[in-house]
Structure formats: C-alpha cells, structure tokens
Length: 290
Image 1 (cartoon, one colour):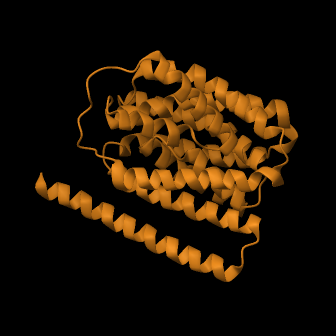
Image 2 (image 1 turned 135 degrees about the vertical axis):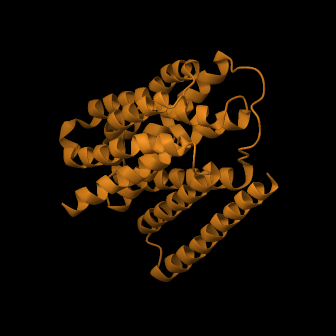
C-alpha cells in the first residue's frame, strides 16, 4: 500500500511538472521506477500505459484553457506514433539488466539538457517570430522524439518542447499545450508496442492505476499553472530531480563506492540549489525592470 501511495504521489508530481512544462512526466516517473529496481522495459511500459489516461486528461485541460495549436498536434502525432511503436518493440526485446545503465545515461543527459535549457536559454519575454513550420520539420522531430520517448521512458516532451520553443514561432504556452496534447497518441502507440513484446503478465496493473490517479488529479491544475508559475523555475527544479535520480541508478548499476557517490550527490545538490537561486534572482530582476 505504501508503494502505491508513493506511486500516486509520483504521478501527481510528475503530471504537475509535465502539464506546466510540456515535458518530464515520463522522464521523472521512469527515473523513480528504475530507482525502485524495476526493469527498464516494464518501467517504461507502466508509465506509458498510465500516460494513455493522464495525457488525455491533460490534453482536454489544455484545450479548455486555449493552450493548443491543433495544426501542430496533427502534424506531430503520425511520425511520433510510428517512432514510439518502433522504440517500444526495440526496448521490449532487450534484457533489462543490459539496457538499464544506458537508459539511465540517456535520462541523465535529458536532465542536464532540461536544466541547461531553462537556466540559460529560456527567454519568456521573447516574442514569437513570424511564419509557420513546414511538414519536413515535424516528420523527423516527431519520429525521433517518439522513439526516444519509448526507449527511455520519457523524451517526447524534453525533445519536442525545447525544439519548438527555440524556434521562437509559437507562444510558450501553446508549445507546452500542443506537445502535451499530442502525447496521447504517442502513449497509445508505445503501449501497443510494449504489449506485443512484453505481454500483460509483466505489467503491474496496480502501479499503472496509481500513476494514473495521481496524473488525473494533477492534469487540470497543471494546465492552469502554465499561466502562473515561471516556466524557467519549474524547468530548473525538474532538471535537478531527473539528474539526481538517474545518477543514483547509474552508480548502483556500476557499483560505485558509497563515499564517491555521497560526495557526488552533495556536489550536485549544491549546484542545483545554486541554479534555483540564480533563476529566482533572474525572475525578480525582470519583475523589477518591468
């Protein structure tokens, strides 16, 4: 029962962040499931099965708050679904103990990217540029993001959201809402791929339901928070969480000594805290200038 409550809280926290940032439900949830010792394929399958419901709830909430560009959603879902299905079949055919360290490295890199992106590169005051995306832009973006989302348990948001934001052709809230809404199709495709390769027997339905419940509760709140909490602050917070959880999993897989691990954790926590303080200072500075 304790584990189910913890999983529900993980789903709630992850969806709050994901719905506010357009990323990190899968990365955060999968990172924590790996930390519990769950096999990568089973962790990713459980998260994606839960996301079928949580992304639907999130999408409906974002549409109601006017955070969605439907054309972007339509162009992302086909290549994204194909990439996700192939990625799920690929991960499901590989032994868990072999792929776990590589998945942790991938998630760790995503965490570093998320932290760097929202600490140094994100500019909420920058106005969107004129012009729209072409079809050739969405095909590789959707496929790559979908493939890595399935293999890493997260990647749709961390890949698609920053790419769309850096293009500066959409409002940040529209990027976040569109990426979150399109993720429903990616979650369905990933789940089908995992069910074909793993079957129902390896998936703990109780874990999935716990993640779903937390995510459903958080979805409408997260869509509302997009308009209130500074995006770069949330991005910096979640980046640090992803880094810390995955470095722990990686150290465990590599049998790193406890003393080295502890010094590394303290160093990372210090840098993370400094990053959060720097972001808060930037937010206050901008508020004073305005």
